[in-house]
Length: 377
Image (cartoon, rainbow, N blue to C red; front, side, top):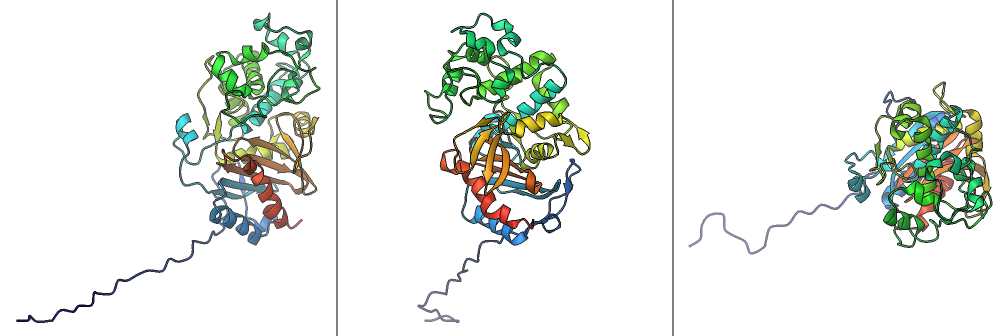
C-alpha cells in the first residue's frame, strides 16, 4: 500500500558551486596613523598603479614568500601592504604575537650603525679610535697580534677587521659557521671576538660578522654609560616615531643583539630609508649628521659584482639596479630597505624565504621588474 507523495528511485540533485576566481588585489592608499609619515597615493607621486597591481598580484598568487611591502616616494608613504596571514616560528621564539611586527635580522645592523653615527656625532668616540683601546677591559686578548692594535671603529663598520671570522661561506645554523661556533662556545661575545686570531691586515679583507655589529652596540652602551636599548630608543626610534618594536632576548652576557635582534613593522622599517634619503633629517629634525649618512651609504668597500651588488658602506650594501645607484639595509630571509636617491624612492620588503639562498635577491628582482618601470620619471 502506497502513501501519498510517492517516492522516487532517483536521488535528489546535489547542488555544486563552481569556485570563483581568486580575489583581485585592489590598491588602497596608506592610512594616516599620525606616526610621522605624510601619506599620499601612487598616482600623485608618479607611480603607475597597474604595474604595482601586477607586483602585488604576483606576490600573492605565486606565493613568493613576501610578507609585506612598503613604498615611499618624494618623502610620502604611498604603499603599505601586509601580505602574511600568520606568525612564523621566529616570532614564537622571540615571544612576538603581533603579526605586524617582523624579524628584520641584519637590518638591525643598519639601525645600529645609525646609532653609532649618533654616538660619533655626540663625540662619545670616533671612527678612527682603536677597538682594543676602547675595550681595554679585555686586555690582554688571546692570540695577540700587533695588527689587532690597529683595528678601528671604521674597520668594524666596514667589516674589514682582519679577524678570523667566516659567516657567509656556510649556511646559518651550520655548526662550522663562525656565528654558530661563537654562540655555542661563548658567553661574552665581545671577548670571544677580540680573542680571535688575525688572518689579514685591517682594511684589506671584507669579512661580514654579526658579532662585530654587536660589539659596536656594546661600545655605544659603554661610552654613553646608558643601556643600549634606552639610548637607541631616545636617540633614534623615538625621534623616528617608532613605538611598536621588539628586541630578541639578550645575549648570555646581558647585551642587546645589536647585529640581528630587532622586530619592526614594514612601515617603520621604511623610515630608516627615508632618514638616509633625507640626509639624516626626519620631518625637519636632524637625527644624525649629513656626513655620517654620506659615508654610510657610499661604497666604502668594493665587492665582486653579483647580479646587482657592488659594495658595502657602513653596515649598508650598495647596488647597481638596472643602471640606478642604490643602497640597502638587508636581512636574512629577504628583508630589505632599498633607497634609490635618483628616484627619491624607498622600497621595503619583509619576507620568509629563510631556506632559499636564491630567494635572497627576489625583492631586488621584483623592484627592477615592477617598481622601477612604474615610475613616471
